[in-house]
Image (cartoon, rainbow, N blue to C red; front, side, top):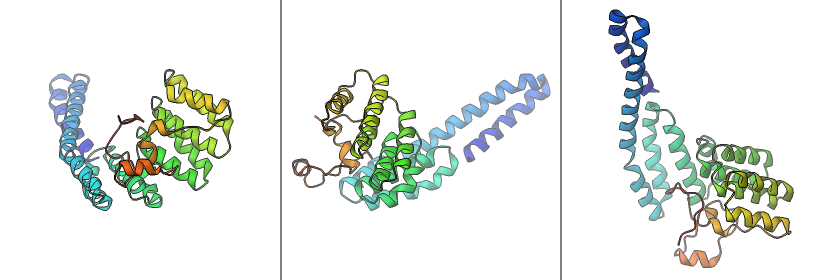
Length: 247
């Protein structure tokens, strides 16, 4: 918000002399350009200031200190008043750490609710939380919001379908996967799960690991736990990817 006000102020400074010499019509374009350029430069400044948070947060999570990771992000939130969307970005990261690493869904919920609609990972966790609480209407709202803005993320369609299937709504699950395939016609994992449901078989989500385990919808197999040295929590926090399996 502060950056927008500063940018408007710069636009006004540019507008006045142009208006004086050339009239208000001629003054509009340079004023608008000045405002946009000013906002972009100020926003880039904040982004650079926050770049150092990633390594610090990842270091804390690697050391199994999620509380420290949350503290780092919380201390950076004072900058969010300067720029639109920055608050929702930090809240999403905090919420995902609470949910995936601390396994505290109630602490995560208000942060996940504030996540931007393009952050399907945070919304998937929110949907998973509502599923486990049997708040199915809110679950569907969270997943629908995630799917609307993230049509190319196969895992969000699959997770939404899995939750519906698990609560006995197989037809809904198949409909959701079919919707996903309209946007991802070559997605083999979605095709495989749709075929499984059509043949009254179980959906298989192992193709989306390690991100799948971060949702805590299924118990992590002991083999996976051993491979990760006893962690087994997975997580979205450090990646923006959508369901690719590590090789």
